[in-house]
Length: 220
Image (cartoon, rainbow, N blue to C red; front, side):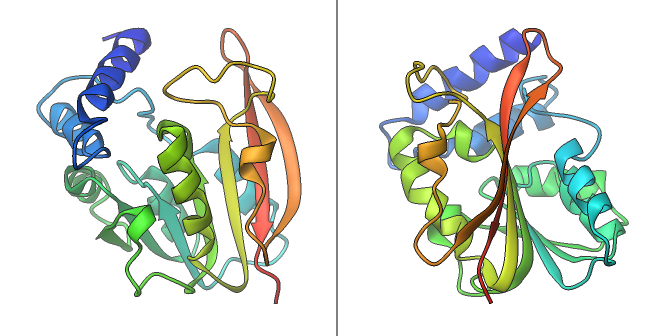
């Protein structure tokens, strides 16, 4: 299945769930289809996110403490963090994604958790030194995204950092999706948190893809 076909399939699944009691149930639908042999996960890759790898490798001090991956999917990013010494928790709203992640990374020392970003369990809040979010928010419709974005910061402990990667657009550009590229205005941190660094990067796709790479911090 081509990337265009897989994008179309996931948009169809999302539309089917949009006005139901489980508007995010399409994530589970998608991973079940993938489990059953359909090539329908457009963000599937075989390696950890390169922006995550670049950030980890840029750290002067060795990693330590607890890390969390939001919307972990098939677990590449979580397994990478665990391999670099982080005590790692990874959560996803889709139980089938977690089952596939466990199968894909049987040796990874990762705690796999079923959770919804907008309804975080108390066991995850205020806990983590480092949180990684890539491409989950951009898959959510505007209303759900606005509710989910501040929830990501609830995961951080004092002094903790959140690295976010997402497609970028200017406010004057149309919001076509899913996935929906995000404006800088949509990514202003909640009160009490800082955007420590903001970069706009070009991904070498055809056509080139603009991405945000933002490091947030909960001040000590």
